[in-house]
Each structure stands twice: as C-alpha cells, then as structure tokens.
Length: 294
Image (tube, rainbow, N blue to C red):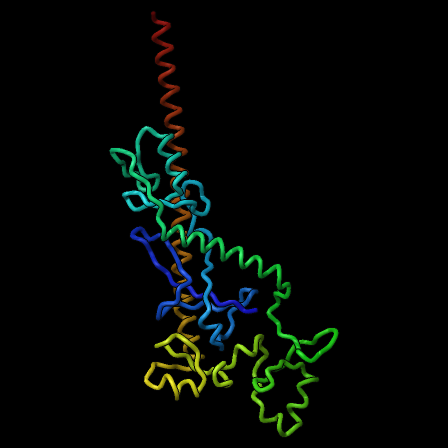
C-alpha cells in the first residue's frame, strides 16, 4: 500500500524543527511508496491522507540525545526533557542553559510544552505504525501484480480503470482484441484502483481543487467546484514535489547544524572537565608545597 507523507513545518523562535500531520491549505506533500520511492498522486485518499514522519534528529534532547520525554521550554527558549534539565542543574553550581549558557538567578519553574510533547508522541506513533505496516505487508518492492493470475502472479503490464483490475501481458490481450474492451481506459499499473475513482461519480480522478484541497473528477468540477481554483493532478504534483525538494534541503541543513551544535557542547564540556582537573591538580601541588614548608 502506498503511503502519503503530508508534512507541514513550523519553527519555534530558536529554529527547532517541528511538524504536524494536519492539512492546512498550501501544505507540502511528500508522496512515497513503502520503498521510499516517489509515486504519482491520483486519488482522493492519496492526496488527502496524511502522516508526518521525518527524521528522529528533529526531536532529540540536546542533553540525553534521545527523543523528548516531557519536554519543557526554559526562559531562553531552548527545549529539554524535564528530567534531563533538572539533573543538569542539580549537578552544577550555576543554573544555566546547556545550549546558550544563559544564567538564571534561580531555577525556573518547569512546565511541559504541550505542543512539542504532542509532536514527539505523534512521531513515536508514526514510527510504530510504519514498522507495523512493514511487518504486515512483506511485499516492499512496489511492484503491481496481475489480479487474474492464479498461483505465481506475473507482474502487471497495465491497469484498467473500467474493470478496476490489473493485467499481465497475457491477460491484457482481450483488451487489445475485443471491440468493447478496446474502449476501456488503460494506465500504467497501480495498486488500489478503487481509490483512483471518484466515489461519488465512479469516474477517474483527474483534477485537484486547491480551494478544498481534494481530488476531483470532471463531474465534481462541473457540479460543486466551478468557482474554485483547480489544476490537473500532474501540475499539482510537480509543484508540490518542487516545494518538498527545497524543504528537504533546508531540513537537512538544520539537522546538520543541530548535530554540529551537539558536538560543540560535548567538546565544551570536555574542555571544562579537563580545566577543572588541571586546577584541582595545581591546587593540590600548592597545598603539598605549603605543608612541606611548615
């Protein structure tokens, strides 16, 4: 089964990437099959359904480097797991932010950021659902097989939008010979043919309504969407994919910068530890020298 990833991106004041599975007008589509390959969106279910699955790095706490658990936002705007920031503060004399080093006169009250918490939970559920789907559907090749073949099924050559059936080369032959079948609409093989047809008018979905963010057949257009902004599905797909590719580049840059920041923090902590050890060693030497003098 094909999966549609509908991604809408927000950024908090510090640029932490968040995303939701909601479908506001003008959102960004990422259409993939289970193999991670892009496919052409032709159905109402394909274009309207949503799933927000991106990389885990977007939800990592910079202290534990794991997905947020009870995320909190402190006064400087940075986000951490509630337990992580408490432990960090308990282990330091100064109450400061591990990211920007801003100090606070007293420990700030910690309140769970419900938005980030919901997004992190949604991410976990999406990952679990994706893993479950992969276990339940072992065919990950993305290939479509003939619906008529018995026993070993051959790869489908075409799908018929009238018969709502996919055919291999042999079983497709009647559509090239019988006069009545020659009139049928054949397309490249696809799964879930029923979803490619308008449920209301039983016609091929060919258009996308940008006003209502839904797929249409020609009858839908003439009856309910005459005054709406509509475009061919091909045009909408190309535009959405162009936006998505640009967004993917921005996401990768943000992830790279975040990971660099994590490494900088680790390096800073290591330098601080070594400096503290050196100061302790110097103090011990001075104290030992004073004891010897007396």
